[in-house]
Length: 137
Length: 137
DNA sequence: AGAATAGCTTGCAATTTGCAAGTGACTTGA
DNA sequence: TCAAGTCACTTGCAAATTGCAAGCTATTCT
Image (cartoon, rainbow over all chains, first blue to last red; front, top):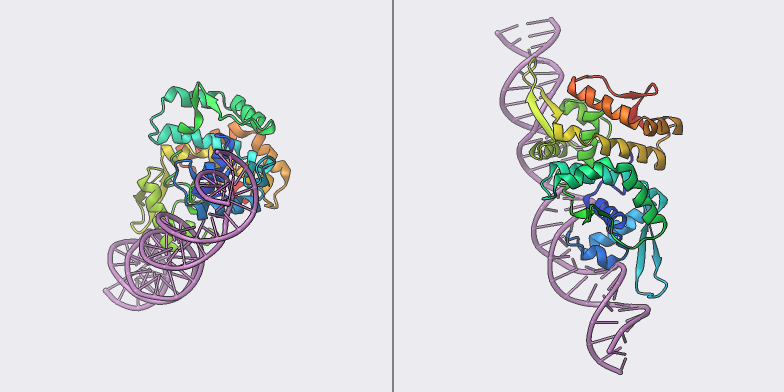
C-alpha cells in the first residue's frame, strides 16, 4: 500500500477540502481553520502535486492566484474520504446528528456520483447533505 | 474530521496489518518489512490504544506476549482501508494484476463481510483474494 | 503611485524521528 | 536449575521535520 504523498494528516485535509469544500487557492487552505502553517502548506501542496494527486495552474483572471485541483487520481480518493467522514462521524464526537451520518452511509453511491460530477463540472459550491455542510461531520 | 490517532502512515499500516494480515504481536509488526523503528511502533500502538482503535491484552499462554486487536471502532475502519487498497492498487505501481484489484472493487461488500467475520471469530489466517495475499496489492 | 493581496520563502527554536544499544520479565532446552 | 534465548519495550542521541513569525516578490486595486 503505497501511501507516500498521502498518509499525513495535512495532506488528507487538503484533499478533503478540495473535494468537499471546493477550495482552490492557497489562501483558502491557510484560513480553513485547521491551523496549518504556510511553509507546511506549501510543502504539502508540492508533495501532492509531485505524486500526481493534485495539479496547479495559474488563474486566468488574476495572475497572483494559483488554482489547485484534484487530478483523476486525486478524485479517485473520493470513496476513501467519504468512508473516513462516515467513520469519523460515527466514532469521534463531532457533534453531528447520527441521522445525517447514516444518510451519507445509505446514499454512498449517489454521494460519490455527486462528488465526481462536481469535480468534472468544476462546480464551485461546497457539498451538502441533508442541508448541511459535509465537512462539519 | 477527527483524524488524531490515525492520520499517520505508521498507524494506518498497523491497522492494515491487524485487519488483513492478522498480525497480533509487537514482533510481527516490527518484522513486517515496512521498517518501523521499535520506539515509534511502541508509541503508535499506545496512541491507537488511547484513541480506542486497538486494545492490548496479555497472552494467556505466554506472559511475555501482548496481543493487539482491533476494537469495534477499529474494525469499522475496514471500508476505509479497503478503498485505500483499491486506490493504491490502481494508481501506484504495486506490480499487481489489475484483475485482482478490480475483483476486490466488484466484491467490496462480500470482502467487507469477510473481514468483519474474521475479526469476530478471531480467525488468525491472512485475508486472501483470488488466491493471493491482499497486502501485496 | 501607494496600499493591499496572493503565494510563497526564510530563519530559528522546539518537537519528532531514526538508529543502535540496553533492560527486565518471562520461557525454553540441556 | 541455570544459561540462553525471546518478547516487548525503553533510553540516549544525532538528524530531520515542524511551528511560528517575519519577510519577500509579483500582481491588482484605488
